[in-house]
Image 1: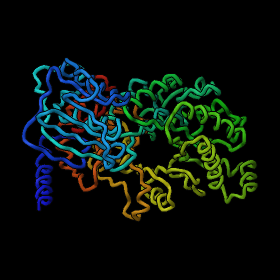
Image 2: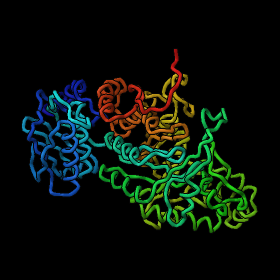
Image 3: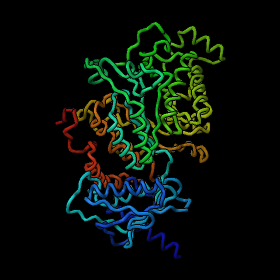
Image 4: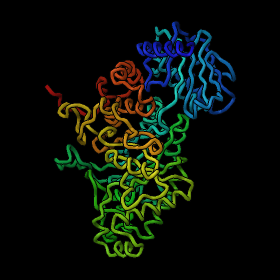
Length: 542
């Protein structure tokens, strides 16, 4: 009877609490009480004597200092706000328990990463002004009495950024990572190479930065207009810049997954190294239009040597368990017309050109596996037979993910109709130019990553969900922000919150406060007042 009464009290408290607890993503379990704790001028933040834990405490102190004008002191052990290493295995790697009483704030977690997510929730329990980069006067810095136990639904919660079509500066990449971390996402998928630009320095192949990172012009307007701006475009990240970004991400518990496209989307690389293509005598140029090119890597031994050399430098740079190799949209025309390719198909006893793609992917998978990493690729890597260790990103709907999970392969769900953030999010005539399609906030929020077709055992292979951001039409960081948020905020809740805890009407109410946080963070989200740095002007529907 006592247990039943406690459950009833919890349910009432959880139901009534959301008017004041505007936490995104929504926690697993919430119990509120009357009263509030006040942040004082001499508040101390305590943490275990461990570098990662003290780092989390320091980040909290820094943000509180920016907003209040007085940074709390960090101490070892107990404070007014205390981070505690817990032995509670139910919290797992990323979960936390947050308790706010008259005695102060306690965040319990098994790991510093879990404590970091607890800190994100604590910040959201404070007034939105806590996200201000400078002191805000006249704010009552209080936190309601609450007990929260929170564990993410999925282990993989990601956001991708394509910097090949339009290069994004390091400062913006860091801001992007900040926003990933704020929303308790843990994966930043960095799309670094494509037909329209190669954006990562590879020391063994210097012409990738001197030739492949530049294109003579860029499409303007819609693809159907077939117009170009005539302006040279370039940009790449040095390895030192990448190391800087990786350190920044690590400090925010965000894993960075590099993507090096193969065997298609290879035109930028072929512009520098034409001998790797199917027509070595051809003069290749970095792509200036959007879409898919027929120019792909020819699977000669020289090409495999190039790809393995590139991946070696990438693996040496990136600590990520996953290395993304693309594998999507690889036209087979040149292989079907090539004597060499056809001879290789016969030699390796492959069925056809799709089998040849599988041959390439399996060789690369073997190489990546030998380096102690896991290969991940778009769902086209299923064609011709899936490599044994591969993880699949299902983007052409859910079918690829379902097929891979049934074969007991791990899957990240990224179906374009729900998670492609380059789609229009409102009536096209009222928006800047975008690639097309329509995915609004409600549709992104409605997504259910685990397909009903899977058995419980197969469903274990659904690692999580990721939002994808392709930048053909996003020339500036401000436009990226406009397209990504708040839809990525919805996807963060899809990845974190239990299925039965989601409710779009409730989410929309919490977003009213969350928008204020994004305002203080300087995010040019959809629905925000137009930022003066936002360089697009578009017709507004009358």
